[in-house]
Amino acid sequence: MTHRLAGVLVAAIIIVATAGALGYRTVYGSSSHPPEHLSYCGRDYLRGTPGLSRTEIMRNESKTSLPGDAPYPVVTVGKVPPIVGQPLLAAVTPEATRRKLSLPCAMGVYLKTGADAYTAYGLSGGP
Image (spheres, rainbow, N blue to C red):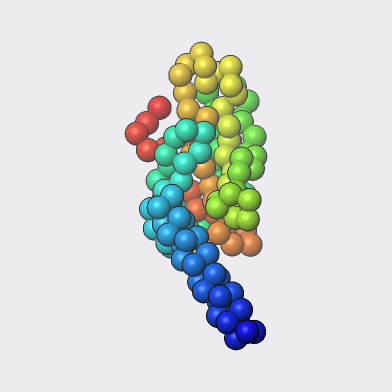
């Protein structure tokens, strides 16, 4: 009886792992990490430059705010995959500005891929 229970347990683990891998591939376009694309705030972002440090991200994002605005702070906006994944960073455009100018939440997002390494993702399709 214990052999049967062990077999059922192994089969269940294989099914759950396979379903997780297929789900990841469906959502992110590949089974590789980092994924080919991400969704954030109702928009799609395509994989770009890998290996950026947080300092490089802060420096780049300090130049992207709208004229007259202070640089938007880079904050954690989620995880990829959700709950158990790596942090996703973005310099989020303030909601009032987004509504007024019909802008996306962020022009780019950054997925943590190492100790101080992030992969940039750029907005697909433009504002």
